Amino acid sequence: MLGYLNVADKLLSKCEKGNYCFWAPTGLIQPYEASTVYGFDCFFFKFLKNPIMGDRLLLSFKLPISTLNDILLTHPRGFPVVPDDSKLCSKGEIEAYLVNTKREFLGRIGEASEKRKAEGESKGILKRLIIFGGRPSVADIQYYRLLTQYRFMNELSLLLGYRDEILNADVRKAFILYLYESKSSSMYALTGEQEIKLLNHSKLLDFEKIGATLGFLR
Image (cartoon, rainbow, N blue to C red; front, side, top):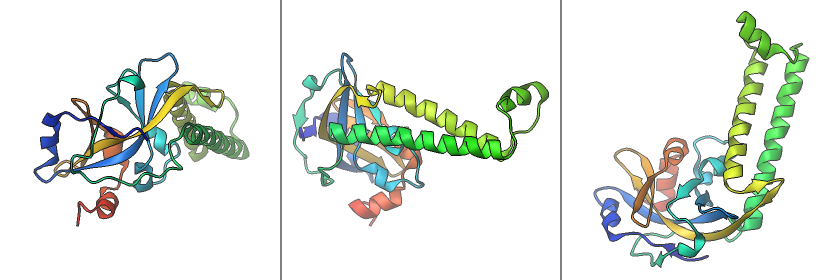
């Protein structure tokens, strides 16, 4: 654990007026030969509204840092700290998560494909739908939805440096200061001089559960 990522003083005022700031452990991933660092979830996936394959990938985000060597650290500055789970967000743990997520997707896609075949759908169904304007079956919809989700997750994995079941990246872990904005029920990451709006966090997380756990909705 590196410590607490530095936050500019001007951002700390956002932690007032009914908002709530807290430190949470976050994986820091810098793909080899890249000048980009990504934050990888070590905590929030436990508070999803609904289970989602690739949950922690969806909760990853780009940080305003070009290299892990440029990281500046600070102290907790009086804000609550979420306890670190040492089992999460090592390079090996993140790599294993990405491997298992890909396998789960491929398994689900295989099951959906078999279901389509069982319903008598041919491999050319999508082409026929486009040409003749027919309606897709439930099995078709599920199959193509899974394919779309898998391609999206694969693109996210590639950004992190994951290829051929290997995470080609340097990985560290640090505490990042997160802001819960009560008025809009939105989540932000505060780091350096930037306030990063976390759209997927805001959409997918159950803030009542988070608030009950951390104490800001009591």
